[in-house]
Image (cartoon, rainbow, N blue to C red; front, side, top):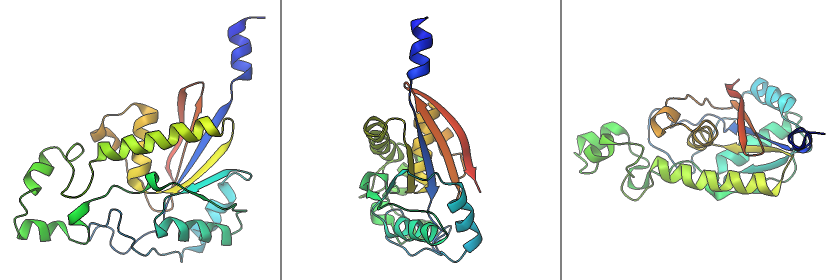
Length: 208
C-alpha cells in the first residue's frame, strides 16, 4: 500500500473551537484590553446555542480574565458538560497598557505623545506599557502549538477574546496583521479551525 496513503489514514486532526466571551459594557466606548471588566451573561438563547454546538469530552482552556470564566460558566449552566478549564494566561486579550480605561477621544484631547506613532502602524507598535498585536500573535501561536502537540486528535474548546481569535486565524491562514484585524469577531461567536499534519483548515469564522 502506498506509504503516503497510509500516513493520510493515520494522521490525527486536532480541532480548536474558539468562543469569544460575552459582551462587555466598555466595548466601543473605552479601551479595555486586559482590564478585568464585567460581561453580560443574560442572553440565555446564545448560551444554549453554544452549549448545543460545542463538542463533549473536549479539553477546555480559557484566559485568566474573569469575562472568560463567566462565559464558560454560563455555557455550562445552559447544558454543556464543562470540565474544569485550564487557565492559559497567554490567551488573554491584547494589553493596551497605560491607555486602558481611556477613550480614544480622551487620548486625542490630551494630545498623548504616543498616539501618532501608534496609528502609523497600529499592529506592530505597542501602546505605552502595553503590547503590539504581533506580540499577541506570538504568544497565542506558542499556546496553540503546545496544545496541538499535547492533545493530538482532540477537540480543544478555548474561551478567549477577539484579539486572541484573530491571532489564531492569522496563524491558520498565514495572514498579515492588517488582514487578520479586518476580521470581525462578535461576542459569543464560535470560530472553528483544525490542524492535521501541520496543515490548517478553517471551518467557521465568527459563527453565531
